Length: 158
Image 1 (cartoon, rainbow, N blue to C red):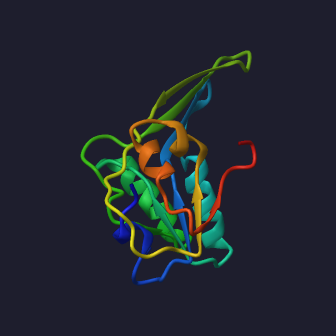
Image 2: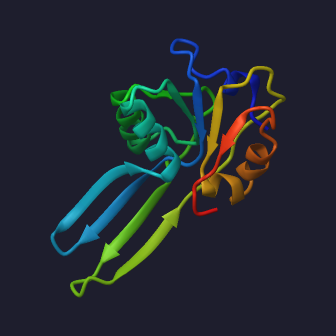
């Protein structure tokens, strides 16, 4: 379950929107080289809201590696706070696309999704959850238990 600490948002910014879901690094390997980009649908939503000036924080699960720092810097550049409980030991999730010379692709996902939790006490104005966040165990159970009293949004394809 999401904690009161999570749902209060970044206390320094007073986030009105909390986005819950995966943060990862997209790795694209092609015959021309390798490119890496911060990503994950919820991370992209939080980043976009931040760029639009909406007070936003992200609750996610990132490791203690270089990729975590890349994601955190990316979010910070848009004014998005990373909520307490988002860091954990280990590697940050990745999504790798290997492009063949003919343009076909092979995908490999290394995603771990978990959130610590206790009962929430304070709610944001809007809670947006990513699609993987609502289905991938063990973190999905915590997301599904998010308070019903808050305006919740889901990606349009669900």
